[in-house]
Each structure stands twice: as C-alpha cells, then as structure tokens.
Image (tube, rainbow, N blue to C red; front, side, top):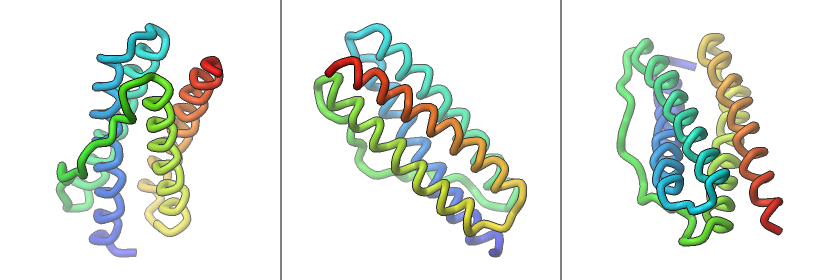
Length: 135
C-alpha cells in the first residue's frame, strides 16, 4: 500500500477521533452525573491523544491531517442516549481500526492502530458499564 492510501485511511481515523473528542468534551460539560461526566471527559482527552498520534503518522508520510468533519451527533439530551451514541462511536472506530490493521502493511502504523484499538475497546467497556448501571 502506498503512502497516499495510508494517509487517506489515517485521515479517516483522524476525523473520527476529532469528532469523538468534540462530542465527548461537550457531553462532559452537560452531563449531570459526576461519574459519567468525569469518565466522558477523561475519554475525550484519550481521543485527543489519538489525534496527535495519527497526525504524527500522517505528517511523517508527507500528508496533512484534515479537520473537515460531518455534522456532529451528540446523542440527545439525556445521559442514556448520550452514552448509547458514545458506544456507537467507539464501535465505529473499533470496526475501522480492525479493518485497517488487516490491510495496512506499514509496521509503525499498524503498531499505533493496535494501541488505539485497545484503548477504544476499553472506552466502549467503560461506557457500557455506566449505561448498564442505569438499567
């Protein structure tokens, strides 16, 4: 796979992390439940760190990270719907990272993506645990 295609795929990831960072940060401001709010805030910081790692991979390969994102879906006005949207976001990221790990042949990129994948799985688990306590 050439650098141009790797950069294209990494930019998909970068935008996903950008969107997650903004959604989680915003939701952490408006969530009334302290535990859920703190967790969402902490995970938004993780997502921002993922952006840095991806931007580094992109620029090392001669590309530029894109900041163009779709309209953001914050998941609604109540905590339950916000957590469901955040779990959906983690699922989307996990699916994309699993696919990219299978098709990218750059060892450094795959190593970073595997690390991000592990963190995304942990995020999903933590969001599910909070949601589970609400039922």
